[in-house]
Image 1 (cartoon, one colour):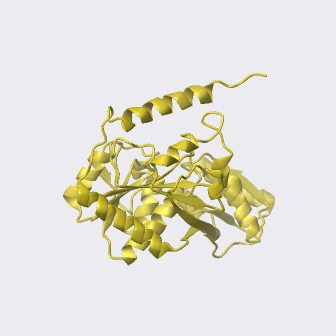
Image 2: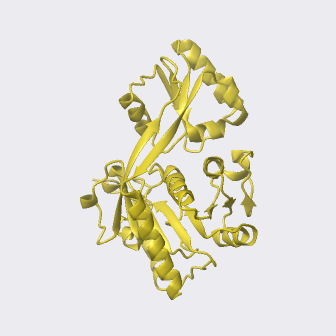
Image 3: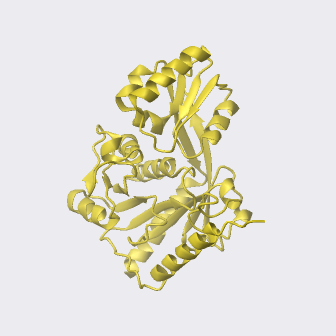
Length: 316
C-alpha cells in the first residue's frame, strides 16, 4: 500500500513555521487598534465571509466602528487599496467587494495586512480591525482569534491529500471556536476555548422554476444540498473553481445549457453574482442566493469578545 508522503511533509513545514511564531523568532507586528481575526483550518467552504458579515452586523448594532483587512484573493492589482463598493473583483477580490457592499464599512486589501492596517488607521476612525481569513496570517498580531470549523473538518486530512491547512491541534491558538453547520464540539480539541454555535442557512428570493444552478465556490455540493433541502430541484448544474471570474464564453455556455435543459432560469450564490459583474444582466431570470448565519447567544458572545479585548489592550 502506497502512502502519500506529501501531507506529512506539508504538516512538518506548517509545524515549523508555527513554532517560529510561537517562540517569537518570527515577529508578529501589532497595530494601534485591536485586531479580531476570523479564519478557519480548511481551504475554503467554512463560511468565513458570511460570518464576518454576521459579526460586523452585531458590532454595528453596538455602535462599534470597525474596518476589515483582507488579502484580496484573486485580484489582479497589488499593494494596499481601499475597496470601492462599486469596483470590480479584478481590482479588489470578490469577497472584499462583497463585504464592502453588504456592511458599508471600510475594507482595505493588501498582501501585507500590517501595512493595510496602518493605512486604515491613517484614514478611518475605526475602533477595531476585523482580519478576514487571518488564522494562518500570523505576521499580524491579533487580540482575539475566532476559528470556524465544520463537520467535514473533523474527518479531513492535511493538504494536498485533504483540505486542512493546519492540523486540528492548531485550534489551541484560538480564543473562540465557531461550530458551523452542526459541527460537534467532541470532534475537536477545544480545551476550554469559548464555543460559539453557528447555524448556517440560505435566503431564497424569486427562484425560477426548474433552474440551472451554477457556482464557483469551495464546496458546491453543499450548496446543492441546501437548495434541495429548500425544495429547489435543478434541471442542470454547472460548477467552476472557487473565486471563478466569469467570461463571455461562460455566460454563453450557461445560456445554451438553459435552452437545452428547458430551464426556467438560473440560481447562483451572492459571491458568484459579484464575479459575474456586468454579465448578470445576460442571465435572466436569475435568483441570487444569500448565505445566512445565526450565532447562538450572540449578545453573550460579543460581550465576551469585547471584554477580553479591553482586558488585553489594558494590559498592553
